[in-house]
Length: 130
Image 1: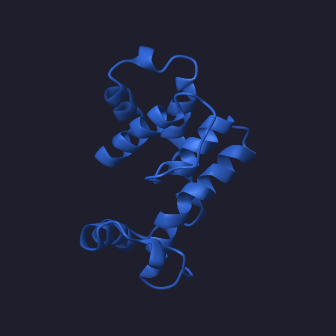
Image 2: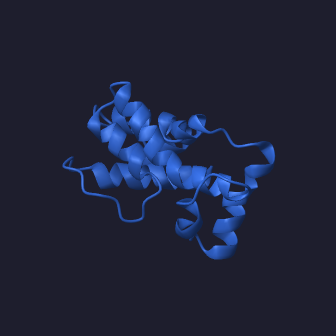
């Protein structure tokens, strides 16, 4: 779904080009870190509700041990890093790894690719729509 939305957000596949293949790979893999600690059915709404009621501040809870209701928040907070490590270990490009690692960051670390922030914005917009 996110891949389809990335293509929709960019408006055309021509935007993607050769380097955009890294964006498409990131769109497919951006939540792969969640496979390390799958959420239970009842845990899935917790991060969404926390964002709604606390305005997106999961920092304070998301760095704590995975216990009780906080487990879902820890997974929501940590899965981008876990997914980036999985992608890097599998041989993904540095741009794809960077996109996965930063897909939830409002102020991401710098990347040398000239369109990295543009690709990240497209990925984030598509992810937020799904």
